Every structure is written in C-alpha cells, then in structure tokens.
Image (tube, rainbow, N blue to C red; front, side):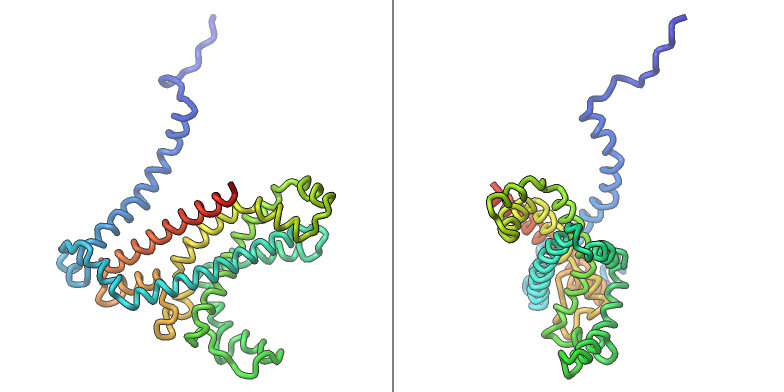
Length: 305
C-alpha cells in the first residue's frame, strides 16, 4: 500500500507572501489601535470641539482656524521654545553619558563595570510618574535631599527652590527625564560597541594611535548608525515629554515648564475643553518630530558616506 500524501491547503506560499501573511494580524491591530485615533484626531483638529459642542454632539467645520489660533497664541510659541531647549539639553546629555557609560562597562578589567551594569537598569524599572514623584521629593525646597547634600558638603549655604524657580525649573524637569531614559540609550550603544571588531583597535595601536585617537577615528564613526537611532527616538520622546512635567511642576512656576505636549493636554482636557485646538497643536508637534527625524537621518548618513 502506497503511503498517503501529506495534505496541503492550496499552493505553497512564497517567502514574501508568507511574510505578508504573517504580518497581517499585526497590521490590522495597528490599524485599529493607531490609525483610527490618528485619523479621528486629524478630523477634530479641523472642527470646533469644545464643551458646548460635546454636549450637542455637533462639531462645526472651521478649517484651519484651530491652527491659526495656536500659532497666534504666545503661550504656544513659549511652549515650543521650552520644548526645543528641553530636547536639545536632554538628548545631548543623554548621548554623551550613554557613550561614556557604555565604554566604561565594556572595560572588563574595570571593577566598576559590574556595579554600573546593575545600576543602569534601575531607572528603567521605575514608572514615569513614580520617577517624577521621587524627584519632586528630592527637589523639595524644605526637606529635599538635594538641598541637604549641597548644604552638608558646603557647596551651597542656602536652600534652592529647584523646581519652583523659573530659571532652574525646566532643567529640574530634564534631569529626571534623562535619568529615566538613559538606560535605553546605554544598552543600544553597549550592543554596538560589542559589535566592533578588536582588529581595528589592534591595527591602530600598532600604528601608534592613542586611546583618544582610537575613539575619535574608529569607535565614534562606527557608532554613528546607532547614534542616529538614538537621536531619532530620544528626540521624538523628548519633544513629547509629559510625565515629568505632570509629576514635578505641572507647567509651573507660572509658564516656565509649559512644553508642547503639556499645552495640548491643557487645551484639550481643561476648561473649556477645546479639544479641536488640542488636536491641532498635537499634530503640529507630530509634524515637527517627523521633520527632525528626516533631517537627522539625512545629515548623519551623508557624513558617513
């Protein structure tokens, strides 16, 4: 008796068709979870949607009026300036620290590498709001640990209102953000450093290159692709920072820490609940993030070529 042939449902799929079929559930999920909210937010940005319209369930079309309102709003322009300053400061410090710490923990003969590998993962396990609350206690003018340390060591003779002073409030929000997001950048850079062949360093050492020259001419150029990834991701998230502002300053003192995401939130979810204006400002922020990402990729890869 001849052995039975294995059952096949239709013809065999090509690798490309199989890849598409395997991704269909993910694409459908993304369409339901992301695409529809994005489309609906765009719809709201072109309509008048406030508390009165929400009660009636009728959203009059206003065209670009919501966008005109936010660009004519001095507070929105201030929020954009604060966002740019916050992003430039936090992303620059984060990349510098990520490269330095990744190189440190790559040195297996350094005893601090084991401690550092453990400590860098601690902030990653803390929820953003909890991290913000922890830092708000550290910054406390009356009983904060930061003022106590500075006073005990003699660095400062008077308490500083870190999160309550307009001159320092934005940077007081940036430090917890860097502390919370730095582990992600460190892990990416560390993985990239591990992938660099030691033959390059050996050849450079034979040619008499010092540690700084090896870093500048070998390590840094080979890290540029991962630096691009970090720049795009961290800039995107820094432009949309919200949790630390909510937990530490809530936009204060005054409007010193109003950022773009906080502006969108306050316009859409505070009286008079002008959701159309909030959606418009969120879209302006998304467009700015997209343009920055394109500029980053084009600039860095053009230099690499």
